[in-house]
Image (tube, rainbow, N blue to C red):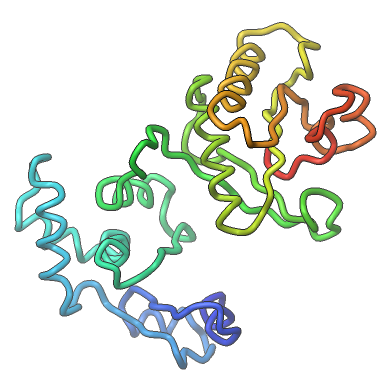
Length: 239
């Protein structure tokens, strides 16, 4: 249904990966007109993609036979489409775990030069538009790093800011904690304070403040009470 909507609105050209018969069964009556369906198990690109995967991973023990088998997996096939320039991006996650999505991405696409910490961000929309920019907010990182160090937390903030650029959001970044401006003492508070300082040093042009509790980050009255004069407190669009 999402694919049909995207194509009907002219947002993107879409390819669905899977057994065409099963895709049509799942589509349950929705029109698949304008959608390309590729079965990774029978695609004529398998040989090309397998050769790419082998070259990328042979130093890690990849064999041509193993690569030929792996490209039949829709996740690997989709990532290799992106690598080959046959697609601009991959949407997945409804029936794959985060780990199963990330593994091929990290092995094939890899991280951007200079990026040591790979993280995720969620684009959230508040229906009542009470928070963020017209109701749109970025939450980062909610899926990849369970307990980031100060350095990783700083990298997550910088990555979130880069993601904001892609969707035309001017980031106002709140570095979250259960403490606001030293209201509590704890190693986890210190970590967020250190991360905030790192972000300010690495990207002085960014609008970032911390450490902030969620209410101080989101509710202007509370934000200005707890962090007077802050250009982020009560106005954050990146958490």
